[in-house]
Length: 239
Image 1 (cartoon, one colour):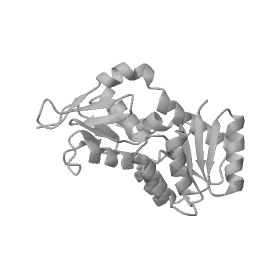
Image 2 (image 1 turned 45 degrees about the vertical axis):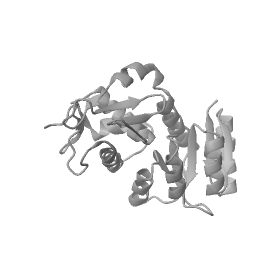
Image 3 (image 1 turned 90 degrees about the vertical axis):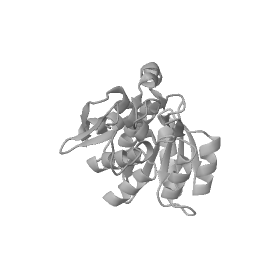
Image 4 (image 1 turned 180 degrees about the vertical axis):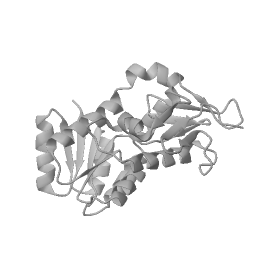
């Protein structure tokens, strides 16, 4: 049984979400404040977090960033705010999905299933994913690898935290070095058919990944932009 943590200060909304998801077979824990949510994120160890942006004590973005310091659990933002700038800010803070209120419960569960499935369904690919590496800079020994069990990147010998979506993108790039991916292909790889995400969201994830793996993110040598189409990953940085 998968576990979902609902961090939502609206008691009626929280109870409705909890009731519906319980009927769908999930184990639910509720928090009505940001600090309670942070405590439960550590003790309850959820498979997915549903997070409201407006909380009585902490901003939802703050909560998201705090969770990201210690966990790669998928986080879906639930918010009345529909502006693109709000979605981009949430993604930058480490969120994996963004759903605007009011929303369909069917859409919520479809997105929840997609996020949890992609977060857990990597064990069958573990051997090939772990073997997928790429050389970086001018040194043969400096590698980028996936730590599959902990869902982390090993960048030049250092473990680097990633969001769920960043990890999935990097896994795809490492498995297909040199292949040019359109933004639509990258969206489908991390979201699934039923989930909504914009081209801008992909660009944000790429910017964040470059900050984590490139020696100079402003002049990327690993994740290259293919203008007018998408991105590709080069298995060895150009000298």
